[in-house]
Length: 567
Image (cartoon, rainbow, N blue to C red):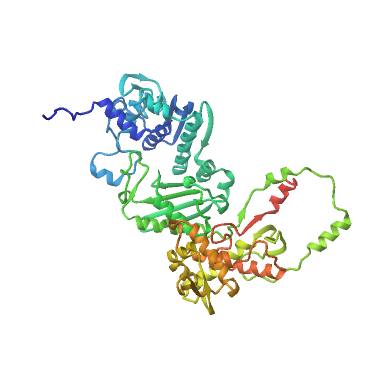
């Protein structure tokens, strides 16, 4: 016999708590929703104060248009919004909010006090709501704009309240929201305070630079690379940290679409693709990518908290992103620069000094002749010495350089092979006598799985009998004596890498690595000069093909700090 009445309509309080679970994850979600409301109210100044990381209270104050008594009460109703009036409005949104869910969802799991006054009104309105139920509506004297105080978040949802992190963690998340919006709307004023301590102040006069300092620190923000691309209704603007500021996580690459902070794996991939071999594996740039498109070309109604968007023509947007990042990386000098001022702190000041005789001998030992121009647009680099049989100490335009001879040689070989492939030139040399190799099981598997990659890189190998292989050609950059050892080393590298992490240029990378000048290999002065000259002739002399730096630079100012000549 069938049982009736199993399906029921949920009551309003339960529906509100479910909606709150989608919109309000933690205190920073409250900050996000309320700040976006301030933007839509036309605010030019927004201040946020949190107590106990936002767990006790979040207060957002703005100087926006304010609300009438009727609107202040209606704002707490579900799906009550001033942003849209019909379905058609969703296709041309220029506001941050539009669903009319945020305030009602927040109020259903907290105690909310809203104070507001319209510009020109004689008095303001205060509305108090607890757990989604109205408590009071009264007339108050308040400044123009709106102030919303959210206290005891999740007080009526114990499981959610217990899941919140410590106050420092929650406060940091709240501050991150403010930093993101200071980037998105650099022309507005923002203040953020935690437990009475002001942690962030941004004024319009600081512009984007002030926002970048708040997000990444003064050192990284000081020399950010800038690029832009526009056309066909799409504009992309990028502020990217220099190569020495990359991170192991993409969390510090901030993405914005029409001023809205978003997450976008494909946008991130487009940025990484544009960097190419300038980035080390599993490293990501820091910075800001801002995309502007026509409102009807995106769908922001994809995620409950509007963190994701969908583009009408994503391929065009991704192409614009790659072009923008490519322009930012056209910076003439991407040499790695490090702040080594703390390095000198490990040394105690010594009263000893060089005698005049010893000083004269050192000067003569370091004296070098000015070499002829290296035929590039780069400043002349003068090799001074090889140290540890691995690094070249050099001088250029008043800067001290340390060059990694292996990384530099890798870049030279990599571009040489790559350009030969692109120009249709022969990249392999046929051996007069094929090398007959007996491969291990793992080496055989590596050959079978990567035969196309090996062929593209210049290796030609085929079965020779029952359990042997004949290596008939090797890359032109390898000597015949290197052929077998380099081939086996490359097979070992390929077998250790996961198939999904192998890319089309993997073989070229490995050939460059195994044919380059090695660390520990002694170089003459002439060899050092040749290596530097060939490096400067490459398209990207600043990193090897794996993204490691080929050289780092210390300016005279850096050296003065190291030796305490400048404090």
